[in-house]
Amino acid sequence: MIKNFNNFRKAGHQKHKAAGKTSIYQYYRISWKKYFRFTGEALLLCLGMNYLFYQRILAFFFLWPLGIWYIFQRKNREKKLQKNRLWMQFRDALAGLQVSIAAGYSIENAIKEARKDLEKIYGKKGEMTAEFYHIETQLEHGVSIEKLLTELGSRSGIEDIQNFSQILIQSKKMGGNMRKVLQECISTMEEQMDVKKEIQTMLASRKLEQRIMSVIPLGMILYMQCTSPSFLSVLYRNTAGVCIMTLCLGIYLCAYHWAERLVDIEV
Image 1 (tube, rainbow, N blue to C red):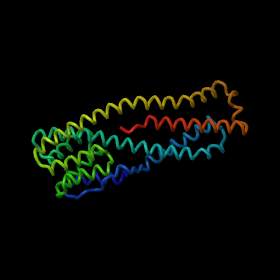
Image 2: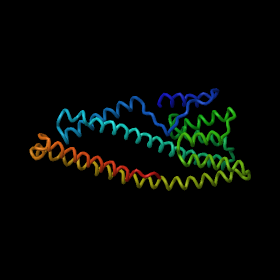
Image 3: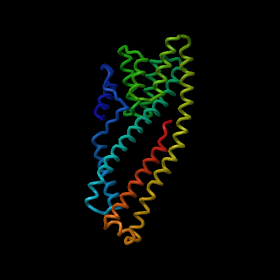
């Protein structure tokens, strides 16, 4: 994905070229660097769980499905973070579009001004900066703004971008004072996005609480191992103890997954 995205950014900088490769944000591909990092984290997770629940070399190899599950979860989390970054940057892009349209710019020229603002805020590596470079380049080649925004909405999977493209299409079809329609539309969308941002802020504290609560059971086992190792040693030396610890690990993982789903609310 990183290679494709770099190619796409270069296409935005070179005005004489047609569209570069664009990213499909709904299908996230991790880079090799992140893949090795996630694999290392999964390895440490398996080592930690083995130490807390089994303390046997053989058990470490049976814990690898847990490591694979962890890599899968990290990939999904990175995908959501990328999508949220794109949404936040589009929110700032709307503010720039509103100012430019109010100043009398056409939507096409407003896109150029918004791209300059995005570049100042997020730099040339920002996802939405690259997308606006792509839109600007394609506009110079005669592609309609409606088509470009519709494609961006489809690739991003973000409802607000899809709604904006549909409103733009309908306002052009209906005619009238398009500048006023766009300003009202952008103002309404900005208010809705501000509400979403507030909800996300409130949910962030709940997610932090959930992660702290998830660590407490593991911390208690580690504390007991450090302060009273003989108290738990009986569970690591016989079949019955292994079965009990496996049951405890299963209950913990189910509770963790359930808690993650409770706080993972789509706004």
